Amino acid sequence: MLTKIKSLFGAQDMTEGRPLKVIARFAFPLLIGNLAQQLYSTVDSIVVGEYCSVARNGYNGVDALSAVGVSSPIINLLLVLFMAISTGAGILVAQYFGARDKERLSTCVGTAVTLVFFSSLLITALGVPLSRPLLELINTPEKYFDMAAAYLQIIFIGILGSAFYNIISGILRGLGDSFYPLVYLLVSAGLNIVLDIWFVASLGWGVQGVAWATIIAQAVSAILCLIRLTRMQDVVTVNRQTLIPDRTAGVQILRLGLPSGLTQAIFSLAMVFVQSLTNQMADFVPAVNVAIMRVDGFAILPAFTFGLAISTYIGQNLGAGREDRLKPGQRAALGLSLGISGIIVLALLLFGKQLIEIFINEANTDPIVYRHVVDLGGRGLRILAVGYIAMAIAQIYGGTLRAAGDTLSTMVISLITTVIVRVPLAYLMAYLTRSEEWPNGHPDALFFSLLCSWLLNALLTYIRFRQGKWKRIRLVEST
Image (tube, rainbow, N blue to C red; front, side):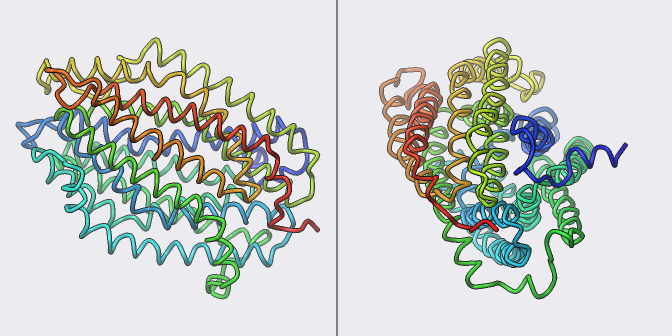
């Protein structure tokens, strides 16, 4: 049985076969894996929301949920260098694999792994001491400031495991192997759930407990992925020699990845400003935002999954010189992504409030605060619902651009939609919706501004794709 599953979902050559079939076969385990990965942050949020109480921890679930939420933009901000390496390596791996160039593929993989190792050490060195100053910068409320600082510092101490899992699983997917990253991630997600419940519900460690559970589980998944990569000797060679950074490969990885890394930096910095606005609205608004973003993490997965799938598909076929397969693959991926996203939109419209209630323990929460969180959360999901259709479109065409090496345009589009549109619009809407109840603006401003940025992103990405300049980029010559 395992052999049959591996034959269906193991390393795949996407330059042959019916595009719809090979994309669906590649994307299905990838989607399951992304769902499992999303469980990390979601289970963390559910556990602290349900099991933290004033009697046991000195703070309630809403405050604990807020502490975890305010940390996210800071974590993302300090992961910029890692994101650049991961993106650049993923593009080259897919194209070298498609071109059957094992030597340069091995050099690229070894260089990427070494760069991620040293960048992770740098992130830890910066993240731990900067945690408290950055939380002060975004006006984190005093009532859960210490919790957020402790959570951040633990996550940064264990960032190496997360970095290694993401880069190596990305390399494996670039080689067409979405099966083993899925298996390892399912094991890790299951371990994370067990540790979350043990550390928080049984031992009473609170917010620090979910942080330790996360980094331990991610370290396990990283080790498993590394073992798998070293055993793929027929495809890629990973040894002491290939782990020595190659200057040419390193420059090419960073050249391709820096636009995406800068995009992530811009996005994360913008989210820091948005988080600062969120923190000023009311003590419980960050908890509303966390609950919505956890649901959002699942809702947006089909768009991101098929975006990753089409990126690997386009990369392999460009590397193999199979331009005739590009358009059929794009159409197949777009149809699959839109179909699943449409179902998700319907679910959000019908069951938004019920989804928010999963993250809050009514018995441990002030009744007025509980009702505010649930009502605002359900309303926020309804506002964002149509945006998932736009994201499905943006990810397919954006994935095509990135696979071809046109990462600069996606950076510019993100700059426009996030910095020039989303952040100023959020502050403007907050200013216009000030009232006696909401002196610093209504939380709806956060979600309407996000929706507008998504819609604009889809439009600009499609326009760039239609210009066709990405077709003339050649990073790897086919053999």
